[in-house]
Image 1 (cartoon, rainbow, N blue to C red):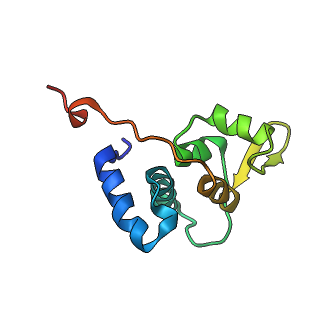
Image 2 (image 1 turned 180 degrees about the vertical axis):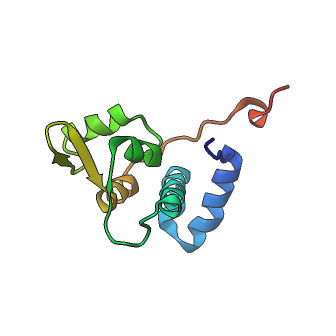
Amino acid sequence: MENRIHPATLTAAAAVLGQAMPEYADPQKLLAALRLATQAKNHPETGTGPRLLTLRQAGNILGVCPKTVSNWIEAGKIPARKNGRKFVRVWEADLLTFANNLPARPVKMAVNGGLKP
């Protein structure tokens, strides 16, 4: 089960954190950094140097589907490496650079704070 962050909490955290670190003032960039940190924490090889990510891992970090990541790679927006005929990998550092240059997207707010009435 994936952990969820309430949009209002994310926006408030980005506002506070953005004062000290402007690169995290955008809620979507903060969310991408949090996803990457969570993924790195759960990875058995944390801290062993650069990592290659699958399209699914890259999509999870950016909050998009793997096909979107693939489209961005084909458009030349994200550098990628091909392993064999069909296995595409993205360097973690390149993905972070791309994520930091993404334009801000509005945070979708759930009705009733995501709670069922």
